[in-house]
Image (cartoon, rainbow, N blue to C red; front, top):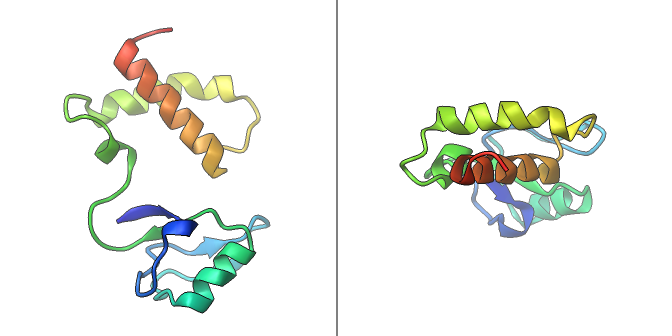
Length: 111
């Protein structure tokens, strides 16, 4: 299934990776099955997304049209990363901005 926004988590889903709060403290470990209480805990601690087991991955390669090789996206991200300076690239918003910028670069070429 891949990365799922916290608002879309459902009971019975299983974590594919550990979930940490903003300070790095472990909240729930990989392999934990989510129930309502655990979902509320994630939301309470400001977790915006979780990596969930099963189904198709929500990775960059699965969101691209098939004519874009993943290597092309990776190259575009590598070229754009310096423009993001000292930003925390682990933050979900910054990761998404980089992904969108790379996608635009791949589709439209250099700006």
